[in-house]
Length: 201
Image 1 (cartoon, rainbow, N blue to C red):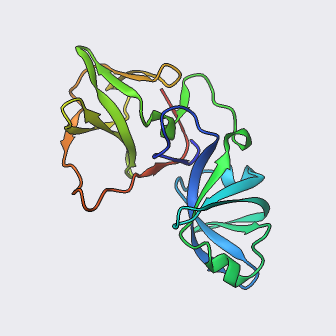
Image 2 (cartoon, one colour; image 1 turned 180 degrees about the vertical axis):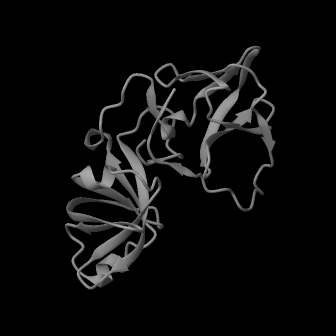
């Protein structure tokens, strides 16, 4: 799989989120990156990134260098050459162009591309995917049903009949895997989780 933003709209976007800037490292502008999917090598193979800053602005940077650490990846970007510049982008999320990522095999998909897909069960439409949640043992999708109820479904083969991103649809074998979840308070919307690498459908 390869890190991606679970909040992207339906349909493949040009960039996929892979992590966030955790802290500045040293005095020469190096950034410590926390990857959304710890085992991903996407950042090590990319040539450039887009930083999405907490204030809503974005900036594109060529990658000057990367090195793996036990906690993530240390990243050097063109245009960020000192600690002040590095600290100015703390908390930013990182996205990489899809063209920098390995091509998907048949039956694979990026988890972020599930957001917005219609979910169908044996009796018809269940709802649409709102976001992806990542847990230590399994990834799940959060579905908003037609009546506004929110449901969660583990992405396990026993529940999934077919995942067809181009067709915009996920077909379930049954509704047995659906779990009702509580809506987040309106004054504190939940931040979508992220997912990091291609999954098989």
